[in-house]
Image (cartoon, rainbow over all chains, first blue to last red; front, side, top):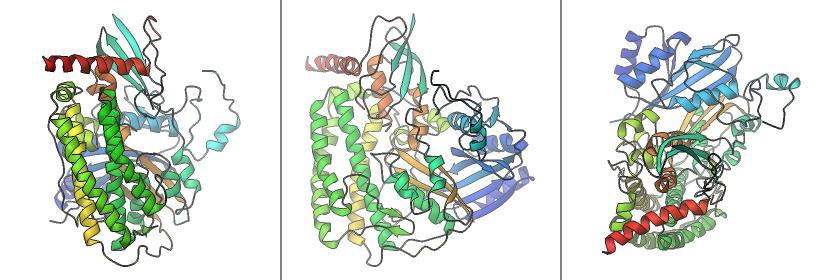
Length: 158
Length: 391
């Protein structure tokens, strides 16, 4: 049997969540565009009903807003179902997945410090990677990082 | 009374800086706080400033032990984005290097684990048979580490037919020695008593935390990228996934030991069926789009995501190493065990750390734990078990 995405799962997704759109990139790579306010329910459905594994999440600063990708893996079929969502830059808030999915805990902390996305409902949004002295208003992976940097003085002591 | 025992910022057993605050009651660990980020070098920030061909050399330097896995996952991601199929010979070469690297990484871990429970003989022997493998790497690629074998659309170096016998000779030796180690480690009652039921991670927790590699397979969570999403030559060779149900440190050790046997099997078949031909394809432009690359590194699935806008550089490059997921699961695995077990449990996931003594109690400052102290605690426990078996 060739491994790959399952038509049955994609059909089920489109009946349960009619607002999403699916793009098939390759046999084992699919991307699903989900509106911002449905991401929580959709991820919950993938994790709790479908038993997919959250591999990681990616945050990208794009022209249209901050894009978040949650990479879910269906290991039995070797397929990645990536949730794509865009949140506007003037309201960088999204519901956190960490309360029901411990695997999302660290990666959301990372995106919070590197991109400045606010994950509502996250149990502990402490910085994960940057130093204790790092100013919380500096977000290294943002496009305007250089501008942000202009009027900041980094203190050496914590 | 609750105390905090900090282990770190350098882990006393292994070689990378990580900081664990163990919250203990008497000897028992009741909670743990994990701090990482001491080694944050901003690869995801640097990567979009380099061209597609330069990035493998950057990501190769993320990890010194599994230096093949990051460039491997990266080239798979770019190949996924641009729909490039590398020639068969390059696929076989990349598979061979990936598997040889697994053996050397697992042996490194055995040595350290043996040292840590007071079996220095295991440490010496295992590392003695790891050494010729590094010579093989030098023979094929000119480097004992940082092999630089992966390239978008192929491999950078060929394995010469006159080198096959040398590799096979080493595999013969290794097969015998691996059987010896398996017997020595699995059948030894003291090691069994020391590692059994220590640091148990249940299957439910393994799934919730999304752990990977031997950590997952030791907990009965059967995932392996090489089987689930076969790439390169992995679906053309015959091998088995190794899964144990117990979830303790012994199960993880057994997974790694038996996996070495499977790796030997894979390399042998690859050498036997190695197709002839070119080792690279011509790659022109990387079209706009995105790609996901996953490679089963010795510690679990390495995940790379790249996005292209059609220029000669990636727009975004996300790197997720397996230890990122595995480390978080320590919060569950270490609870309820003694301090003598803690450092062993923390090391059982094989997080990529150095025997540096930087551990102090800073609350209630009577006792200071250095790396030596932790080793002593662990060795004493092994010694008590050993004495029990001598009687």
